[in-house]
Image 1 (cartoon, helix red, strand yellow):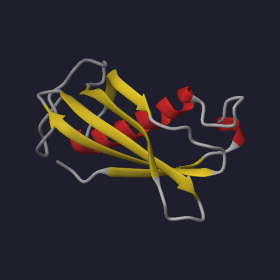
Image 2: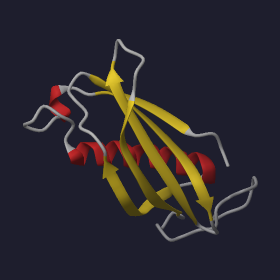
Image 3: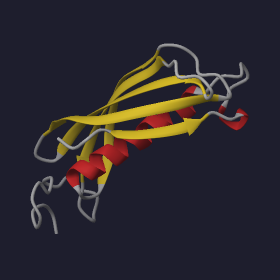
Image 4: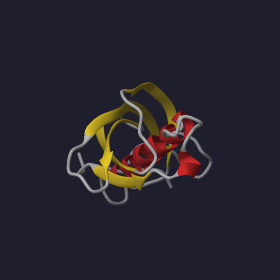
Length: 128
């Protein structure tokens, strides 16, 4: 399996809800983006999300905090992959971080028509 993908996002007011914390829909979008990058790097071809499974919101992420996402492919099948995404958050000026998000995404390698396609594990393999 390839190395985990790591992404960092500073949380600004336009990403927040009326409580001043990261809006859940935006959090899901960031997690999906990390899963997409990890799956694409693993498959080395186009991928789409087939399902998100059990996304847990452990604690709120406040405006001004740094959100660090780590995505790793944990299972690779013929055309599908499981990607687990975990996120920690904390103040930009401090080293301490707490786990805030965790979820699992099923990603599928696809051809030019959007149909499932075998993952190209070796150069030249996969869909045309």
